[in-house]
Image (cartoon, rainbow, N blue to C red):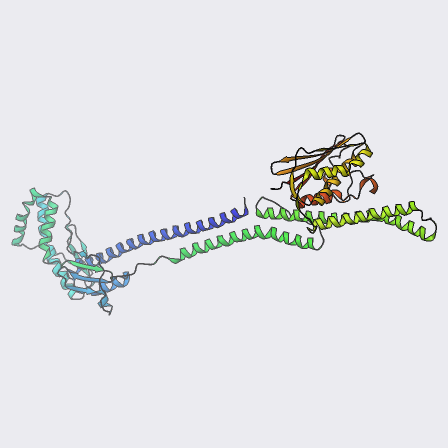
Length: 538
């Protein structure tokens, strides 16, 4: 996978993980705290109303309620305002705490009714139940009065419901259970019984009993309360920060770990290439970097190795060129030196033939030096060209004419196949140099009776020049070295028969400078074909 895609994928993964973790945590925390808030609010409301009802149930009055309200407000943290249904204020936790009462919240008031709930035994005969209910009313009237008296006297009063739901009072001043008051005869009881009779056919006995019970005990029981909880504009509880910080730290650690892995994946090969480049600069041309994978880092490593190969090959070519130049110049210069020393010492007579031979040797060395200079200038891009629009057919005709005498002497047929003019923009002298080199090599490689053909074929926007011979050909293993400097296909050929070995290198550079290509194909025993392709003039 591409290194860029891996980096992008890692960053996207980290971003998605961080976003998902944050969203999940926030939603989870919000839901949990909402549930906890609702549950806690219900529990607090239930506790407050339960304790207040228990107070009224046990004491029979709301006198002395303030300490209970203050304790509940302290335990629950709620602002509690207690008033009767007629809006008579009984207690306010803010006032009890010594501060100005705060504005109440908009929540509806909670009703607290201290009257006992009538508990009717199941399976009882209705008439018996009516009598028990009437007795329970009388008992409650007496019990409430007794409980209120104890409360006003400062006693700690507790109560438990009996089987009919009527409180049975006990106090710390009287450890034993208070003697249950006896029922008293009351003319209103008969009225209650008479009032219950119509209920037998209209609704269940229990509902009738509860209604009559509530009516009779209502005058004695404490009035119902309206409890207001909370403060207006009270800020909601904030989300817990610890889990959020934990997730943030986890995401940060994941990012750091990913960055470390990514930096290791990047820096390890970069460090290896840095070390290899340093050693390469110090002369260790054989140093390479290990390459694995197919991403950009691997491509960079491959490019570095190819560069090192190129530098090493260039260094080797430089050494080989230096050796080749020394080899090419050493022998003729040694001959010139020997003859000159012999002439100086009078060992050899300065005959015209000897002077002509020495002059020819000097010209050959001059040609080698000129070729080297041309090649160096061409490879450096400093070779001077004078481009003009020329007809390749005329240029090839001039090349055939220049080598016609050499071909006739060698018994070789030199042909030209150019049906029509083809124009290119090029330096005519440099192209004649290329054609002359190719034709000269072809004539040298072709035996008597053979053929060397020059052909010109237009191919769309290109002009194709071919130089074909029917010589002995070049082996496949020699073809890659054909354009190397000082290289000869026949190692036995000397300077007189094989040239300087620079002609093809110069020819390739000239063609390349004209935005063209030169290729060769050959078959041993059949012949060789050089193909030069140049862009046509527009």
